[in-house]
Image (cartoon, rainbow, N blue to C red; front, side, top):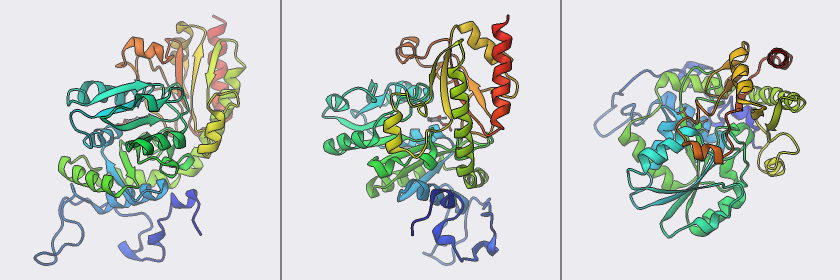
Length: 385
Ligand SMILES: *Cc1c(COP(=O)(O)O)cnc(C)c1O
C-alpha cells in the first residue's frame, strides 16, 4: 500500500529493515570531498562530491519521493536551482512566465537569462489564455501557484494540458505549499522547483534548492548540468534539510491552522482593506485549490488603509519578526515593496497589485492565540494614535 506523505517525510521505503550506516536513525553527514576506488575501473558509486555525496543523495531521494518524481537534485539555494534549470534553454528560446513570481526569479530572468539570449513573455497565468502566447520558439511555461505575494491560483492540470499539446515544459515553483500540500508532477508538470530554504528546511537556518522531475530526458540533462556547474548542496546543509523534512507534516498543519485564524481575524479589522488567503472561501482560487492541493498553506497577504499603517505594523511587531523569507517555524512579516520585490520595476509591481500598504505574512507554528494577541495589541496601538 502506498504510504502517506507524513510517513514519507520520515522514512524512505527502501531503507526499511536495513542496518546500513551502523543502523543510524539520523542519516550520517558524509563530510568528504572525494572517495577511494576499490580497484581500477570500479567505484563505490561515489567518486567526488560535486557529482554526488551520500548525504545529498539521501535528501534528494526523500524529496523525489515526496514529489513523486524519478529524481531530485539538491542545490545550494532556490536560486541556484532555478539558474541550473535555465541552462536547459539556449539563445533564441522563449518562455512564458507568470507575472507575479518570486522577485529573485524575475530578476534572474530579466537581468541574466535575457543577456543569454532567452526571451520571456510575462502574463497573468491564472486568468490569461496561455495558449495564445505560445510561439514557435516557446520551450516552457513557468508558474508559481499560489503566487508570491498576490496568491493567484493557476490551474496546474489545465496548464499542463496546454504544455503537452505544444510540446513545451511545464515548470512549477512549489515552494509556497511544499510537497505536503501539492504535487504538481502528479497533475502533469515536468519540473518542480523548491526553495528548500523555506518549508522543507523549515527552521530559517539554511539555504537549499531542489529540482524534481519525472522525465528521463530532463533528469539526464540536469544531472550533467549539476556535475558540470557545481552548485550541489553541501553535506551538512543536506542533513539540515533532511532533519527539517521529518517534521514537515506537523509544521504545515499547525502553520495552516494559525494562518486560517489570522486571516479570519484580519478580515474583521476596519483598517484592513483586503485579506488575500486562498483558504478563505471567497478567494477566487479557492475551488481550484481544493481540487489540486491538499491544503491552502500558511502564506497570506493583506492590505492596510495606508502606507503609514503598514510601516507602523512592521515597526511595532515583536513576537512576529519583520524579516524576509518564509516557511519557517517563526512567523515573519515582510514588506514586498522594499524587500522581496524591490527589484521588480514599480509599474510591474503596481500592475500586479503590490501597493505600498501591502504586507505579506509567513505564519509560523507558535501558539495561535499569542500571534492574535500580538496583532490585536499592535493594531490597537496604531489605531489609537
Ligand atoms: C525564496 C524563494 C525562491 C529562492 O530561493 P532561495 O533559497 O532564497 O535562493 C524561489 N522561489 C520562491 C517561491 C521563493 O519563495
